[in-house]
Image 1: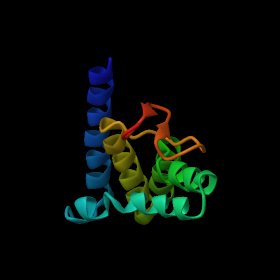
Image 2: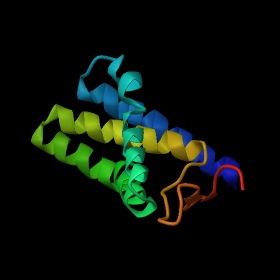
Image 3: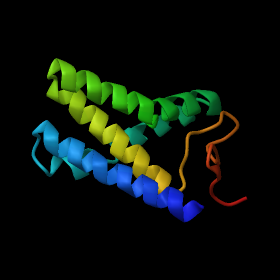
Image 4: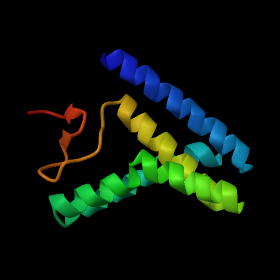
Length: 117
């Protein structure tokens, strides 16, 4: 089952590349911005709850889709860009087993525990 989920996430990551391509920005911006949502991990410097909230806001695919859709409808290219990057980053993270975080610790995700026990 894990392989099927990873394939699904790969498909969504590839779809994010298509969404990005449609937004009209130069190609190099996609890889340059792809890891930017991980800045949300800085919230863990304060505490686990705040860190999880920050992380989940920047890694929630629903938020990414809404941002892209609003940008598309309003013809706001930067919202499209943000939505495509957030969606692609979240898909890439999930391919590697990093899910949305629970407030107990960074290692507790909706996909299971990550890291060393």
